[in-house]
Every structure is written in C-alpha cells, then in structure tokens.
Length: 229
Image (cartoon, rainbow, N blue to C red; front, top):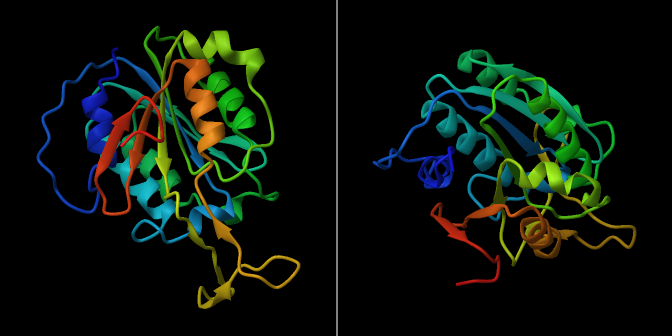
C-alpha cells in the first residue's frame, strides 16, 4: 500500500509524546481525513478526550507528509468538506483546529455521509494514489454504504478508532466552556457513550479497510478485528 501503516501508527501512537518511529514515506498521494464531530467525541475515556486525541493524531500525520495533498471532512449526522485537498499543511492545521461539534447543526454519526463526502473530495484530485482515513468512535450509525463499496475497495481505507468499550459520559459545557455536568437522557440518567464496534467492523470487513485503535493509555493497536487482543 502506498500509504504505509507505519505512517498511520505515528499518527495514533502516543500523540502527546515525541515517540521515535521509523516510517516509510511515499509522496504524491491524495489523503482525505474524515473526522467525527458528534458530541460523543467529547467523552474523556481517552486523554484528554476523544476529539482532542483525534486532532492530535491528524496533526502528527501531517507532520509526516511531504509532497502529499491532504483534505479534511467534518461529519456527524451529515458531512461536508472542511478543507479541500492542499499541500498547505499549515492552512489545513488551522481548519483542523476549528473542527468542533458546534460546527455540526445536527448530531449523530452517519458513516455513509462521511464516506461519500470523502470519496467526492478525493475524486476532485488528479492523483491515482488515494487514501481515506476515517477517525471516529462510531457511537451510532445511521446509514449504509453498500453502494460505494467498489469505490472504497479501489483505494486505501484506514479506520482510526477513538474510544473504549467501557465508554464514558459526555461532558456538557456552557457558552464560556465551563463544565456544567454530563449529558442526560429523557429519564435523567447520565448517557454513557461506547465505541460502536459492530458498525466499524462491518465497514472494515466490507471495504477491506485497515483498523487502528487508539487505546486509553495512548498506545495504538492495529488489528483486523476490533475484538482481538
């Protein structure tokens, strides 16, 4: 594969530390990273929270690129291109920094919308080497993607899983960013968000995708099945 798994490992392995990891680089690729901005990404079962871990991972990914174009897709119950394919990693980083759940008018996790929008963004490029990186906890799943499986199988697809099976509550903040407690359901019970293993494993199986899971302690684990040890 042109997009080396070692490079992706750099993106997710202890992003808060300066790990020394040898990577194999291949320039001239188009890479689109779709980042889950659903509210569940604010859960703190990985440090400091799922969204920040995702953001740090993508920053580290960009640090390892040279001559590759990168684009960003934001998604929750819908998806849109946050940053089109570019060689300007600094500009992409600024767009990445602005990616928060507040950008999404409707909450949820529609993987189908994320994948279709990412494929459209890749189609706007002219390079044959194309990579799609989906960063998500897949806490919910509202669409299927059977119609785009041939397109997914024709490119390199990586699924970076953020979160734990045990899950965590979702913090709620006021307009000043001060925590007010945790999200509750209609019965007043605190909502616990857990990784949607079923949806992600189904996607990986059908799209021949590679799964990389960021664990709670900051290490990464690459596997072909989410329930592998």
